[in-house]
Image 1: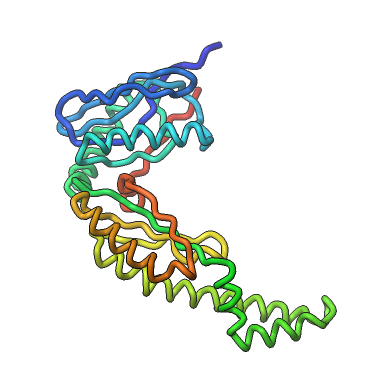
Image 2: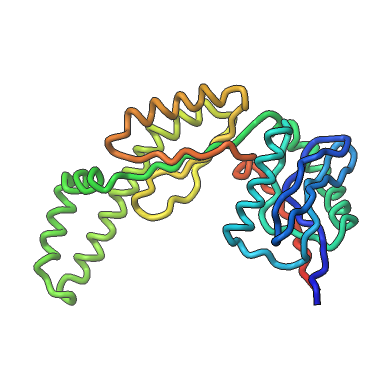
Amino acid sequence: MSEENGVYLFCCIQATDDKDFGEIEFEGESRQIFTIPYKDAAMVAVEAPVKIYPPKKEYVLAHQRVISSVMEKEATVVPISFGNVFKSKEDAQVLLENLYPQLEKLFPEVRNKIEVGLKVIGKQEWLEETIQQNDAIMKKKRKTAGQSEAAGYFDRIQLGEMAQKFFTRLKQEVESDIHSPLAEHAVSAKTNETLGEKMLLNGAYLINRSEEEAFDQVVNELHDKWQDKVDFKYTGPWPAYNFINIQLKVEEPT
């Protein structure tokens, strides 16, 4: 039995007429990208099977490719989170009508703006050198090294707590010296949760398209200052994922 086709959503744009965004390879087929309009807003979508879409690489990349393509042609793009599929164009139209009051407020806020991301990863050699300069941690480490598992239980807990505080201080230093200057050059900025001890910053920045080159220059200057200690992972441009919170009700397949 073949799957019923519905409407998979990528993003919203500010537009009053139909837009041509070409085709996308999705679910093993080349599918036409189309828009569903309401007033001066429109959903960007494709016809696709109504089902749960797992965050597999092929799906996520297809989702991102469509939004990136739209961003090249449109000044105002409001992203829709991955995996939202509705049973029909009519259902998507109802959703758009319900979202329209939010979109009216969002469109001016994101017009001609992009999001860029910066992850700062501590280099292993620098992290080891820095922690070895901490006398209290090294003293506690030497003490636990010669103890049995039972005898050194509480010392090891204390060592873990000291290491956690050490990395927290490093993250605070990076936030002060890297994130804060970038935030001053952004329309809006935020820090997200870091993954693992080596990641010292996971920042997101909303900037004007016209100021992207100037912002890149600030990133480059900070990288030059910190390059012996950390690696930069600078990504974008993206739509304002971290600065928009639209929750959609996902249609479950029946």
